[in-house]
Image (cartoon, rainbow, N blue to C red; front, side, top):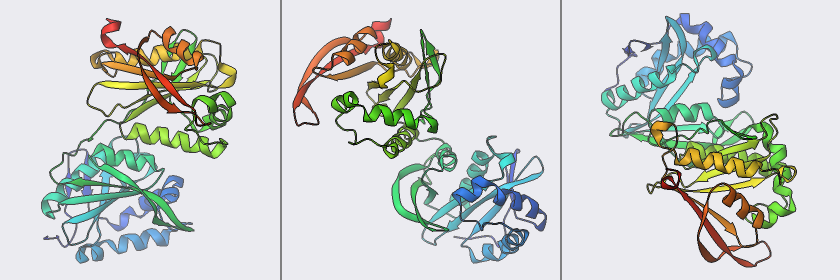
Length: 371
């Protein structure tokens, strides 16, 4: 590995990576005083001008050691943030990055990371680059996903915090992998139909999720749920929804009436990462939303979106399956009203909370059925 003694300039015509200068101090100060930067990184709090000046003063010296190779990000003639590589001398490095608030949401970080990683694999002869971020830092994870990083998992207590350690995601990118997403990141589109609306989950949904999860009927037919079901369980559920969608495995919607935003239930498509072109659809309703036709309409909307061809704005799936426990007649009626047809039985496939094994009845719908 032949590391230059100071940062070279790299550009794609829109974004430039260059060496830091003392004139960057106001930009560094603004970035590190930003609440999101302070929430997800270990910058000093409060962050002072002296901290920014010290950060800039150390950049050239750290380049010469070859252990912390940081570039200033510039766009529109203005300092926008910092990206860096931290080689370990064994053909791998860790990446770090951050932008000031004004530069976010414009594709600046994606361009910056492609410049940085391309240079690192070439000039430093790296074989693999690793990425880490505090679990829950979805902006950092999405930036990593856009340039091809694959999230390997969650490591408990991996990253130091001002008060201890925090759980963190970790991912990797190898030199022979394209700097493009390795899999879909499913973002549920808003769908509207006859008397119902489907939207993505929000943090404000947790109270209604907790109420539904604690309901006796929900507990009976969804035996995998924690019991008792608490607000913390609902928080974990919303985060798991985001995780499944970010990993390209599932897509979920919150169901609401058309004239209110209160969560009335949930519809989910799972198994989307399988190459078969098939998926499974599941759903549940809040107790005060039952018997109003909301869930049937929601399943109807979600199923047709899933089976619609990609050029027509759908997911392009070939087949959907709903599995319903024997005795759950309300759920069976939802499937039938949404156009699904009986297609078989999996005997004693579900174990209820009291230990009773019940059959699961299958209902399916295919893209051919719709055409």
